[in-house]
Length: 282
Length: 256
Image (cartoon, rainbow over all chains, first blue to last red; front, side, top):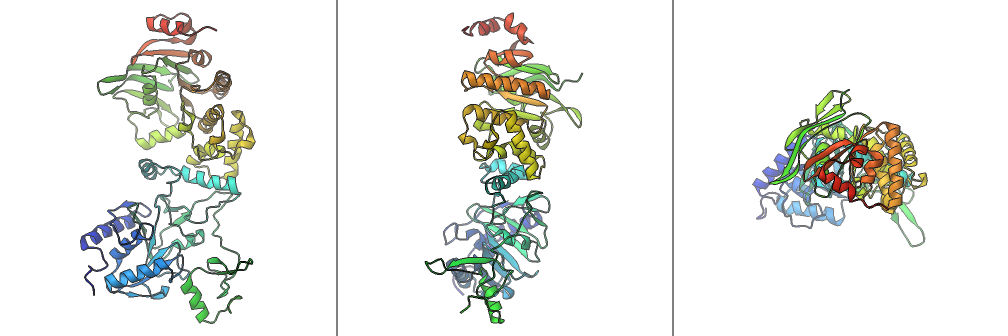
């Protein structure tokens, strides 16, 4: 063990964050203000998610950290090491073994269970931000359920592109009440949000926490004649051959060569270990 | 006949300074009332009190709602008042960018009120938007352009289309022709007059331009230093002013 308090934050701060989390769970989709602390990392690197994880972790937990689906990128590796050092807890890269999963930009492909917690890093929690810059006004719009403006954004998409071109951070309505920004996950992941695990959202710079209890109803906004479509690249994974997972396009040379691979590295590795082989696996 | 809007004893002060005081009037359906007066006479304060943007210190503003009959809009809850503001009321700002979303296309601007009251069919919204652009004489191929690319007169007409798309019954206008050159003003007035007559709108128009009220208003209220100095039929007040201030106001207009 180190000289840090368990999971870096002091106990008072964790209590304050837990109160915000409980309030968020009681009012699904509502943005609860909290006194975000300075963390030893820059804003935009997951300060909100780290504080929520720190408040949610217990010494028996196993932590997994995902950055854009991958376990081995800078952000994921450094946050995992951070909690290893400050909380001395077990970490894993396997979705099934984890009890707390902190994520940036993805939901794991493997369905989560009711004994797991998914923590999202959120850059901008306010879905109405780019339409209405005044925070006083957006709060009033949330409290009065004035969400017509959200559809103006989708209208603009269709008018300009012929279809709803918003592909990530796609706005959702929670239990017919609050409109919520699901953090910048691809819209492919939106239908997965009605899940068994608890979902917590932390925005450090904006000082907001919001949450979804298990099996909360999450509806992606759309028009009657332009329904929501959870699309993905129409390919198979080049390594594991999966046709149901979200894919990253990887440029392989400067002659137009490219391949599509699962963005969820753990899912892809598990499939390859089970003997699935894709077209580009050498 | 029940008045559509009925103001009784409106008073609004800013500290010791009087914004407007002791204003009472009835506005009947289909009627257009003009409020004229010099800068600082309390016209805009009064309009903001009537439209629910400001809470008057004293007085009642009774609006004949579709559902529940006459209601005091000053004392109704904020959600109810905001609902009125986006269905039965319209507010045309003097400065068009105040009333428009400048980073949203013309079609989106017109469609916003429809979507705010629950329209969720893209084709219908677009059809109505393009219909309304036609009615305010904006070419339909400009529907996907942003208001930033429009001229001042077009922006003002777009603001009017955006406000009238939900078929409101009462329109508040704050200097609708301010800042436009005279030929554009004339076209806008002509358009407004047509819309008011066709849709049977009631309107309260605040302006310092007597020509505007001469063309549009049935009745006139003249304000000075927060007080109403004279009221009456428009032609009567302008052709035979009784109060000294109104005489001054009418004689101040240059005859070309």
